[in-house]
Amino acid sequence: MSRSNIPIIIQREFNERVRKKSFIITTLLMPVLMIALMAAPALIMEYSRGERKTIAVIDESGLVAPQLESDEEIRFETTDLSTDEARKELTDRFGVLYIGSDILENPANVRLYANSSSSLSLESNITGQIEKILEAEKLKAYDIENLDRILSEVKTTVTLQTFRNDKSQEQDTQAQSSGVATALGYVLGFILYMFLLIYGSMVMQSVIEEKNNRVLEVMVSSVRPFDLMFGKILGVAAVAVVQILIWGVLIVAVGGFVLPHLMPAEAMAGVQAMQQGMPDAASMSGLDPDMLQAVAAMTDLGYILKIFGCLLLFVFGGYLLYSTMFAAVGSAVDNVQDASQLQMPITLPIILALLMMLAVIKDPNSSLAFWFSIIPFTSPVVMMARIPYDIPWWEILLSLAVLYASFIVMVWFAAKIYRVGIFMYGKKPTLKELFKWVRYKY
Image (tube, rainbow, N blue to C red; front, side, top):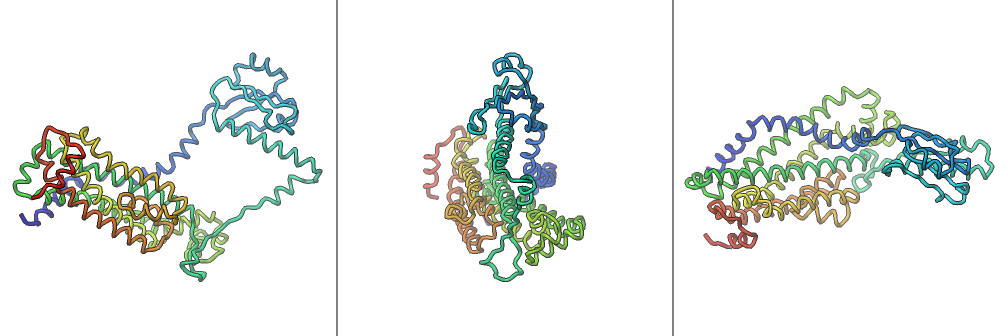
């Protein structure tokens, strides 16, 4: 049968998924979901605070208690009761805080008697306040006048702007922000992680459903098994590509046309100055340097196109590599439950890639980062996390070459398993049996 059947299968798989309401909803809501996931930790910390806790303070030194400050988490109140009496009588309080008379010489002489489970944030709050009070008391021993004013004037915040000297030694190079690169690398790596799992599993479930419905037996009478598998993989890949293109258009539209009109004129002047490599761009706008660099990146169409171009290539390549393996597993089993054992060797590298991404972000130029961004099973996630750090192009091209070459090899192995598996029913094969199928000659 000629390969003209592959476009027909691609069209069928593509239309079947794109026309679903779930695709439209997912495409529109995914950017919102990603923003929500990024903001979730801060929101959880904000709204997970418990009730305000009252703590009775017994301060034998007389130095600390008057300076303890109550806040939304803790309310301090002093008591003249002894420690034993307070522990017995003040059971309606959260706890009793005892501070010894020799606290300056012995900072460890502090005890909290809690009437229920304590928490790390509460204990850090208490120890942090006591440490500041003791440090201030020790400084007073030096008998320096206006010490508070002097410390306030001495306190200095340093703003560091980083320029890539290996890119250009001229002043027209835009400052680089490690904070922006880290946040963007985390988001891009997580997107790759989700795409590989979601769309790879989608191929496997589709194969299992068609196998159970005996659709494959009918289709292979007129289409070669390889064409059927390859067309299904490319059809689902087209769905992923369309989704990324839609996101790219939305972000380009927001960054290139909407955001400049929403930002104040002074801020946009600072953004343009930063894009032109002016060192004093932050002072011109009055914005935080990291915020200014984030806006500069979002409004730089060339930078956005570079990021989405690489995202498209690595999503497509990573999906092709993993979907071939998922398709082979789907053809070898009769239901999703049986597939769980066989797909474990496939999902483990994806999970490893996510874990390595978190380590690689700390040092994107390490040997560990380089090799895990070249190994094809981890490169899509890890390399996308490194790209915002403006790594050399040859590393990106080498990673892509290895990734797509690995897909060509993997699709040959997967086709061998697929050819046998679609006709097997009632038995869950082992990994050893799958390797036997690969060695079959046709």
